[in-house]
Image 1 (cartoon, rainbow, N blue to C red):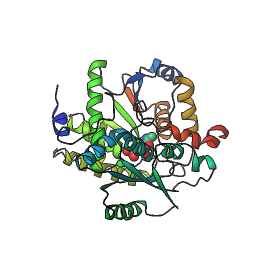
Image 2 (image 1 turned 180 degrees about the vertical axis):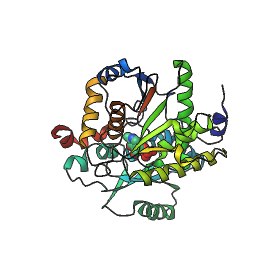
Image 3 (image 1 turned 60 degrees about the horizontal axis):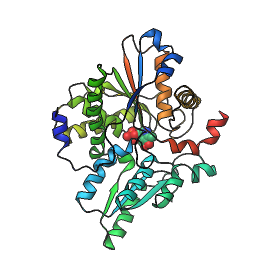
Image 4 (image 1 turned 60 degrees about the vertical axis):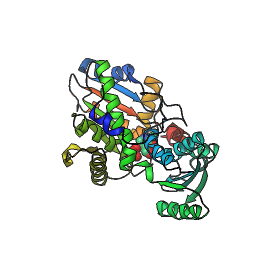
Length: 344
Ligand SMILES: Cc1ncc(COP(=O)(O)O)c(C=O)c1O
């Protein structure tokens, strides 16, 4: 059945980068390990890491809308920005390769890590394989400004360039996760129950904001989503998420006014900062790998899953609750964090 959200979304051009809904699976071994079975709490995983292009991950949902707009405008070059090990940059490079569009990446050394694996392996290696041209800047440099300068240079040569900001997290990019909220609600109908809470990592906020806007449009409320911030502290992350969710709702033509209380961002897992490993992250990555044979990344999902595990252990969920953890991809990052994952 076509919902008002589907109708609103259909007004935006979209490139087809996904092959239908991503699967939802029950995490039975985790449920046993965490003592959830006797407490009557269900734990489910939505496999947004399970997509066919470029290794998959949450950024493909945002890129569907960015690339839809780009193709409609006849863009021939995309420039985007991120940290050295940006998953968004890697997926932008992969998508551009698949569509025959040139791609340039402006990457910043924003994480205090200098190991050769961090600089050259993981996403960086894949960026090169996908044929992207890379510009690497030191910490503190304004990557977006540099991207705009580069875009102007290319435009003067006759190229049609689109610059996509950090993480693809504009209101247009967040439409991808508003759409995902609709996908989840359809999957709930098949499962026969509604999730109590949907859990995501929060970096540039587009994933949380898009889901919040989508659930709000569907009458389920933005508070269905909870995120763990991995990039900024809690207040900054929550403020950005609220603004972006509100902008996404406005783009969808929805006049709802979200309250700050509807945006649940937890700041407990940030540790010493973006991309800096925590002991809880290492344990969470191992727990997922050893209980389910599945991979989560050290920068985003690893910290978010650590937060969820802590909440489950601390009794924050009740009998009858069903929790959905969105696996957002980013596994190439594991290869840039060998040291932290083997020594911690
Ligand atoms: C693997 C992964 N998960 C989660 C996120 C966070 O998504 P957002 O930036 O929309 O908050 C990112 C962002 O780069 C990511 O690469």
